[in-house]
Image (cartoon, rainbow, N blue to C red; front, side):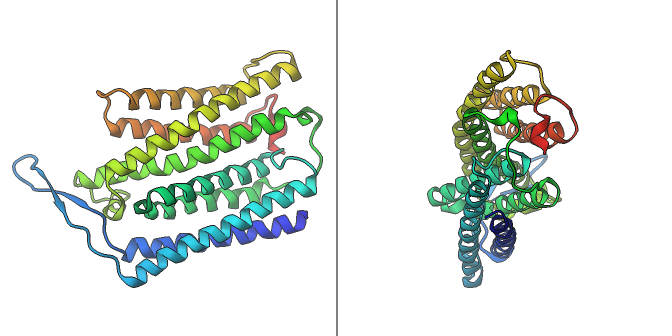
Length: 308
């Protein structure tokens, strides 16, 4: 089962990469979304909306193929995680390799759900599969460890509760980060910026659509992350005798919680621009990356066993 899981991970990565390429073809040769062009009158003129161009049949077929490849890769991804758990005889998130597999699986799950609700966001699949492919490649090349028993500190039902919640929230935040980053790119393009990466904004969905998706995804993920932090504190008290130990993992988990709380607060404040709120969301994902890789691979603390 462990060998099958490893092989399926390779299938998953290749499927996501092929899906990314198909998304890229649709993105490059498909129809443009509604474009806002600024008429240059004086220092700055009014925004003029240009009609979207219809996609070609080839680009449309590439988009359909991209979704199909994403679903195929998702199925391989799911089975890879399940077989890893069967081989280990436990929940398959006892180390960084398994955590990344779980988080990216949740991310792709959320993306497929978002796609069924907002089909006009299909171009975002290019960036979701890009991030998922990179994270899985890093996991397979640098974080991989053979299937084995858990260290004694992880022999607890709190592993399923705490780590499961953290991985789930991380995967949802991944999709929220993509939506926030694309919102910033689209805003920049609408304001006349044509250098990279704002040149990518021409075919992205409208800015307000991206912004609403960003908010809804983060609003869904934040309570799960909150629950994961609380569950971790309860587990810490049971395992180490204290709810809070100022361990680097605990500190950065709390920093991420504060940043995302600031995002939701700023988003509910009318005087704060949507550009600023999206930047806060991007900063939140940066804290998640530090929490996942920086803390586990660089810092030393009570959670150091999570890096093996």
